[in-house]
Image (cartoon, rainbow, N blue to C red; front, side, top):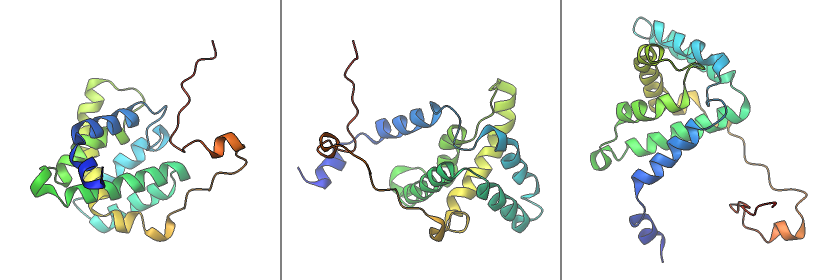
Length: 169
């Protein structure tokens, strides 16, 4: 089987659903609860001064824990690539921001009114983070994954994606 046939057999809706499920099930969102309101506040000056808003957003992104930054950076770059094919997949930046945003930025207590009020702000933030990903997440700040260390001989023969499901029973 070649790469092209593997891709054509893949149900993109299932993959997208799995990604959203993974993000929803994290113990804390990619944007930590402590920064949630600060991220939303970046949108308050967006219409009046986009430069100031972008700087505020850059400052908030810089405060993210490293792993959160790396994941958000990767997701925004990936979503930018997805929107490049919007004529085929019907997922432009705004659609992606709407579908993915609530999985990356969400309040600690998710009552319906809070979620409804925040949804347009989250969509606006995600639209900017996707479309401005090169500015907000410069390649110079990327970190390479650490190579595996201290692996036993048995672990060296196990593929990296292997998850052990054996029960201890």
